[in-house]
Image (tube, rainbow, N blue to C red):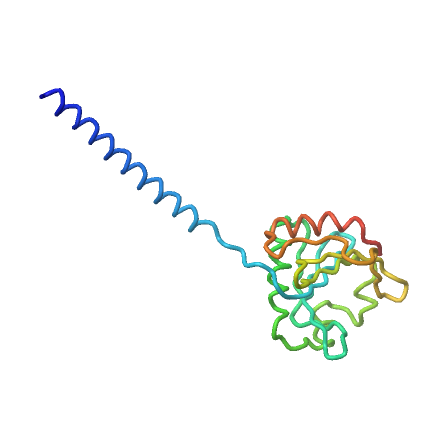
Length: 185
């Protein structure tokens, strides 16, 4: 009888230990999920990312006006090289979020922010990557070539690179940095 009682005590203790371990593991798992910051998906926006000779980046959010012409909708963001893919991706994501329901940023303020008198001066010796969100497709990347008049033409007809709208900041930054070598100024 004592052996049976001892047996039940051991089995009961084992069950209690297993339950306690399960609860502890669930709590730890929940804490890990809370620590992970969810990056909002990109589902709107357009940015122009320019790079000078030293790889300093200029990120300009824009939206198309009623005539279909791209207009800056916020103050450009400047990243001094060296920067890492995470910072570049975060900057692009936050700039794209500015595009929704924003009024055009006046050209005079844009040029003043860029410390240039006109677009031709700003674009001189700068490489440019176009990034925009397209419904049912995702985040579209296109590299460009600068023409003599200071405008840019796409290097690739269609979509050069496409990422899911749930892409992380590091992935955004890596794709941009990898595409940069295809740009011509």
